[in-house]
Amino acid sequence: MVGLDEIPLSQFVPRCHFAVVLDTYLAGEARELTVKQQLEHQRVEWVSLCKMRKHEHGMLGWLPSDLLYWIFLKKSDSLAEWMKSIGHELAHTIEGPETFHPFELKLPDGCSTYATLEKLCEQFATRWLELPSVQASKWEVLSELAMNGKIRLAIPPLTT
Ligand SMILES: [Zn+2]
Image (tube, rainbow, N blue to C red; front, side, top):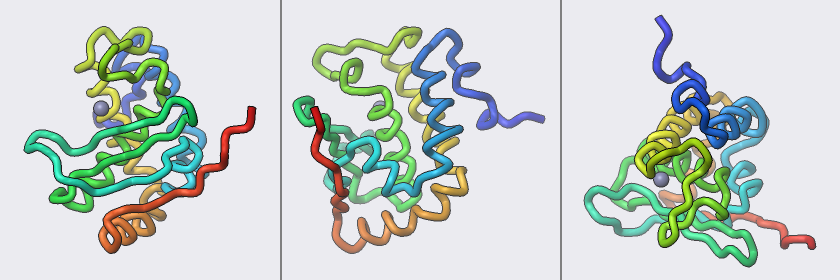
């Protein structure tokens, strides 16, 4: 029997270009790079623990001018939940700031509702977490987070 996790995201949400982009990412960069390298590659400047409301686990902030992202994780969550939230927010960075904007919500093509987009990011996170590259390198990120409450990444300046 095929597990739900094995279904490509492009089958999970058909006719959604973003799902294809996420599938491509999972088959490419995600397998080659460590978690830290992936965050740097997606221009995540830091990941930080903070207090959040009951139903929240992660949040994404960004600076459009420098194309920088910040990932916030819920301090009281478990390490496994931190990793899931990193995967979820990473998916939003792959989506790009053009479409992801909470005040003026433009959904990626083929994602009919915000709930569909969120489900897609959750499904991405599940698949991402299972990759050997992520499993092998997650402790580097988690131990630093647990120790300092924050990790800072080395983002090269934008070249124009
Ligand atoms: Zn989300």
